[in-house]
Image (cartoon, rainbow, N blue to C red; front, side, top):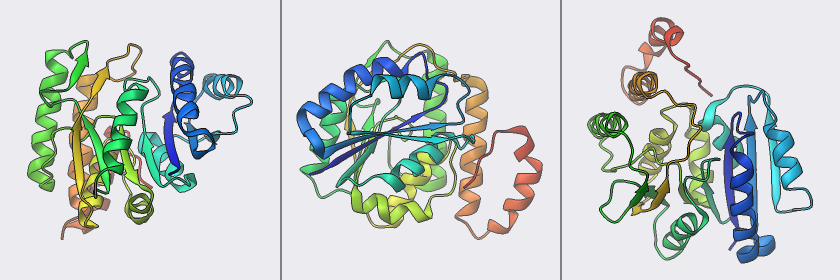
Length: 258
């Protein structure tokens, strides 16, 4: 079995090296030439590319894709999926909030099941989250999850956790259908998996909240809500309203579409 790990990276020069230090030895030792770690550096204005290339020199299992435009995390993951050759394709955040053993657990769960995807969840009783997230962030997450359940009927507790793995076939099947590349990307991906008939397993995980995130909870919460509203319009009889939505709402958020 060949494993592809996609790492979207936007201005991560300060956090990407620790990721490389823990992920590359862990997975190369276990998989040898049967693993590829694909860094998709998108829209970065710092030294992210330079750091990645310097730290992974001499590692043939590492691929670096540089996208000068700001295509967002979702767009970067799509680029990585298009380049991936693994039987299992997954992605993880560049801050290594999901450590290698927790990511490997997702891979093993997928291999032992008939599912099309296994996703990490921070909301199971068995999950371990360090340190505990702020009340505002937890509340925002629960409200967002409720909106997703209502709008898309996805019975999933944590759509936004950054660690997910799919079968290579499932990834190939949904790539042409993915369109929203910012906050709604994860929801879009899971929704497309369900529409394609794939089973999704949600699994408890160990997750470390790493400092240095550029996320502003208040603004992000508004943008996330608007993004899933747009996505719901895309998959509805009212798709004709998308142009009007983009003209009126688009200027107020960082809306990126494929």
